[in-house]
Image 1 (cartoon, rainbow, N blue to C red):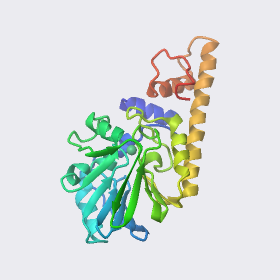
Image 2 (image 1 turned 180 degrees about the horizontal axis):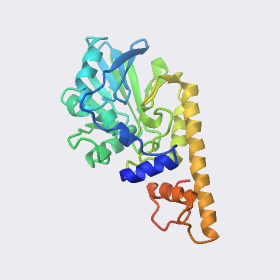
Image 3 (image 1 turned 45 degrees about the vertical axis):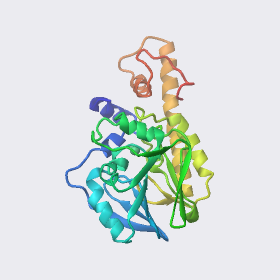
Length: 291
Ligand SMILES: [Zn+2]
């Protein structure tokens, strides 16, 4: 997507789409990271966008995500500040470089696990502004996997499309805690359509995750929250989707009654949404496809 199009879209329809591009710009001076205790042996590292979870066991540490490559040294230092155990596994939530960019440095000593789609998205360089040397996971799964280490268990589940087509939700059953990756990220849903994201599937994906037994949520971005916070986010996704659908239906109705008006702001916005969602120029409303 061109920058011009992005700016127009975000200016006209402030609730949707692709802001992750801004998240994923690499920075020369990485911000200072902070590590915060979530529960018992579970910590989270914040700063420089994507949130990292740190789970300490007697046989090593399991991370969820590893930020950008530039954050490697700080992540290692933060983990050392709370345990002498080595990092053994990284469960990766998705392919964006603010969550998987650190793979490049961790992969020589740590086993990295992701969904098959997340790996494919790295291999095919779906994120155009990611570093060309990003390293994908060696171990992948399609529906569910788990790591058992030091008597503790961490599960990774793929419930369906949302932010991308390869988002894993990481579940710490003993701590009743989720790491959602960017299926929950800040306040506004960020949809990576080139990366297979789906605003339609997103709510179904979160509905499936909501059935898990948990009370604490580490989002992909933003502060730690709870089950009610995730439900509110899910409802926000639905509200925004319905608003987009309404825009498209209204624009389609106007088209049906006359030729396109070049100054019709509503119609222009609907065309932008349709284009980003993969509809072809000269589109016709196709509500079954995405909305
Ligand atoms: Zn992302």
